[in-house]
Length: 268
Image (cartoon, rainbow, N blue to C red):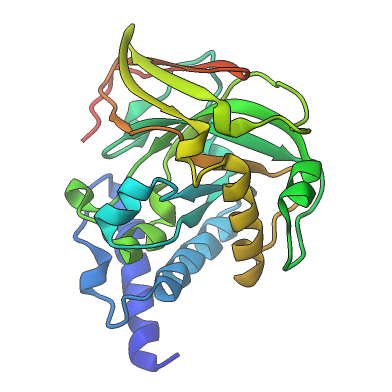
């Protein structure tokens, strides 16, 4: 890595860190980076992750993003990305989500996997991934962007921890086994009105395919998936803007429901 690129990576990380701390959206970090590759985006993300760990936060899982072909086409990419879930990002379903923690929140319904075993080989297959899942639960991911107006490219969102925000998990549904998650249908309601629909097939064709991709890719970047981690599969349908006081309920066939009610703060 050249000194110019290293300096730019630190500047991008500082910009995103300042945006998060001040709750003030910032300009796209791509404007700072001479190399707009995905690897450079992950270098910024890693730097931010190291800083958060130094502050005492713990990694509890990962999130997969850009699993929808439509979103990939919009950003001009042909692959998903991933971010890190920290211990303070999980929100209990029985308490309002504090919207003042967020800048420009949007919400999407997903499948969450709880791992009962490590996925630490370079040839993870679907059957191996399935066997490693100790629990499947419905989930709501509250995505967010530190980039003003969601003006992002692939390097921006990767650097910004895959536009992560918060998440809510529903109740346990048990081991994955041979269940076919492609057939899961999803309905997301806001205050009783349907605002998003989709299916398991919208997530890279199968949420298990997304898990396999993540296991292989995370290992390539030196951070393999470990037992006990929460894995958010990626959206089953379009994401929806969050407004103060809104109440969302996602229903996933075979997996049940998960809810998130937001406080009446002032998301920007």
